[in-house]
Image 1 (spheres, helix red, strand yellow):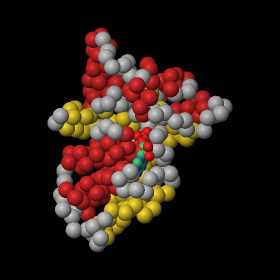
Image 2: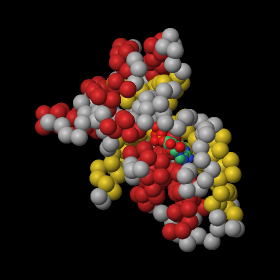
Image 3: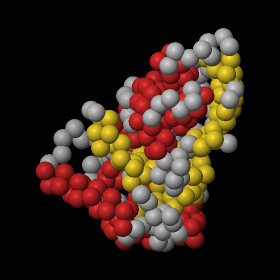
Length: 306
Ligand code: ADP
C-alpha cells in the first residue's frame, strides 16, 4: 500500500463528571487526511484546507506524530501528508487530537499494523504535547478506540472501552469565541473537598453503569460535573440557557465539550437530538456570536479508512 485516506473524528472529552478521564468520538464530524509514501525518508505537509495551521512539520501535530513513528519503526520511506479540516481548531472538539490520532492510525496501517491501539494512543499523545504542552489522552484515545473511553490511569496508560447504547446521539453547539485551554484550566480548582469528590465519582460510576445497562435515565442523572463546569461555564456565553433548553426539550443531559467553548448534549434518539439542535440554535441566534451546530451518532469505530 502506497497511499491511505482516513477519516478522523471530532471527539468530546470530559463528558461532565468524567473531567480529564472520559471521552467519546463523533460519527459524522471529523477531518480527512491523505498519506502518501515517498522515498525521501522526510515528512512533508503539502496541503492544509479548512484551517490556518502550520506547515512546519515540528509545529503541526500530524508532522510531529508521523516523524516520531517513522523514526521509532525505522521505516524505509517518507510521507507526504494532506489535511482537510472540517471543524475549527480551538473548538473544544479535539481538532489537534483528530490530526494526531488520524496520523498515528494511518502511519500504522502503512507499517502493516505494527503497533497496538495503546501504542498508537501514546504516539498521538506526543502530538498533543506539541499542540498544548501536555500529553492528554482522552481525545486521542476516543478517536483511536472509537465509542466511549475511560482513561483509567496515565502511569501506566490504561484505556478502557465502554459499550454504548446504539441510539445515543450527540448534539453540539460551537460558539465561535476563543477560549485558551490555559485559561480554561486555570479556573478549575486545584483542590476539591471530599463531599464534592464523592458526588463526582458516584456520578462517574452512574454514567458507566448507565452506558453498560442502556439505562438512559441513569445516564442523564449522572451527567453532572461539580468540578470543572461550575467555574468554566462563565467563559461560555449563554451556557446555562443552552443547557436548560436542551434538557427541557428532552436531552438526557448537557455539558462543556473538552475545555470549551463547544457545548454537548446527549439524547436517546435522533428526533430528540434534532429538537435539541433547534433549541440550542434559538438561544444563540440573536446573540451576535457566530456558531455552528452538529448532530451525530457516537462513532463505534473511531478513525476509519476511506
Ligand atoms: P480543540 O481541542 O479545542 O479543538 P486543540 O486543543 O486541538 O483545540 O488545539 C488546537 C491547537 O493545536 C492550535 O493551537 C493549533 O495551532 C495546534 N495544532 C497544530 N497542528 C494541528 C493540526 N494538525 N490540527 C489542529 N490543530 C493543530
